[in-house]
Image 1 (tube, rainbow, N blue to C red):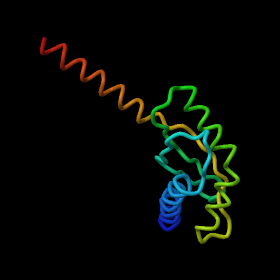
Image 2 (image 1 turned 135 degrees about the horizontal axis):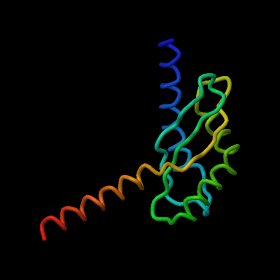
Image 3 (image 1 turned 90 degrees about the horizontal axis):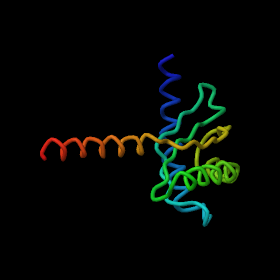
Image 4 (image 1 turned 135 degrees about the vertical axis):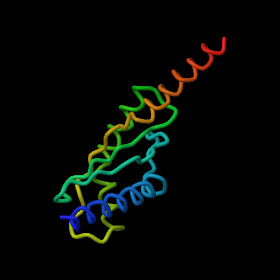
Length: 120
């Protein structure tokens, strides 16, 4: 069981690195903003990869639009990924927006407001 987990972790980690490079260098789509790959979760059978992304400097509508574009480009991105990774089968890519960064910023704002309130 431990070996299976180890392989999943390695595949996820490698996939995250390669996807970052692909989005940075190979995908030239003006609809995409500054996209960051936060995490990749691969299913046990490696059939599906959930790719969690954040997009900087856009509003809610822009975030949804970027995720939609990434899911539309998924076959192209998957093809590029297949060229780079040494695997027989490459996972189906599904992109999701990761709002943990936004939540963290909101908590930081709230804490900052508390500091200012307690000083005054």
